[in-house]
Amino acid sequence: MPTYEYECTSCGHRFEKFQSITAAPVKRCPNCGKKVKRLFGTGGGLIFKGSGFYTTDYRSEGYKRAAKAEAAAHSSKTGTAGDRGTKTDGKEKN
Ligand SMILES: [Zn+2]
Image 1 (spheres, rainbow, N blue to C red):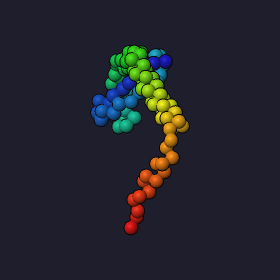
Image 2 (cartoon, rainbow, N blue to C red):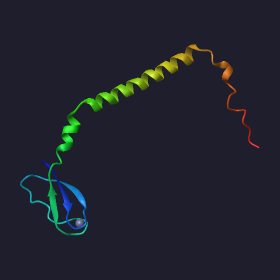
Image 3 (spheres, rainbow, N blue to C red):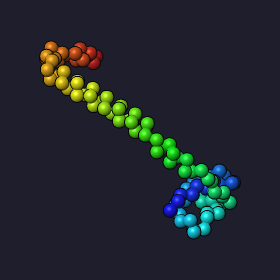
Image 4 (tube, rainbow, N blue to C red):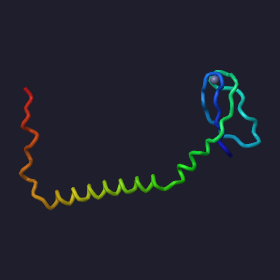
């Protein structure tokens, strides 16, 4: 079932209606009750969603963060960070 997008000709309210092809189109605005027109071209988002560069970019970013966290955990485990215990406690409240 396709999703139809409507726009009110009176108040400009936009909404989507998920309905079958045989169903009667929406004629009234749920916001003000005036006439609405059906918009086309809502399927354009599917083209953008289909391209894989966004997913790839997201994955590489996540991989970098995971690798960084792993490296930090590794260094803290092997390094001797015992001397840095009192670093932020020097600021006293008067
Ligand atoms: Zn309206």
